Length: 129
Image (cartoon, rainbow, N blue to C red):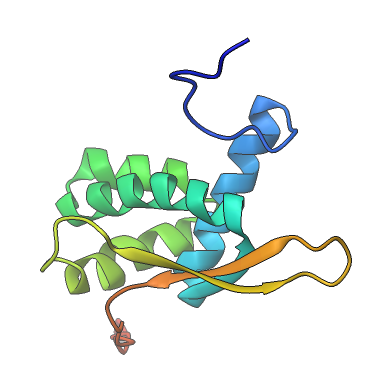
């Protein structure tokens, strides 16, 4: 049996569980700016979040709705489109970085941190009157 041209990792999960896992990881990354997870999950998250960031940078209604569908919460989607994507406008790809950190004590799994490459500044929110 060969594994040629099989893209993506399965993580020993069903398809809907895999999608929920990636949605949750992407939402956490947008909310916190940096997360720690296992190396295979981080590498798979890079493929997922890069496409979402590209849609967020376009910012029109259709792409905004696709970003909302790709993340778990609307608040995270709005933060990505309105605050983070304009700060990443200078680069065409490579928005996130994966760095190996340590081996997990319990099972010896390789952990990695995934974070945005550019330093993101928090934008103060304007209050509506």
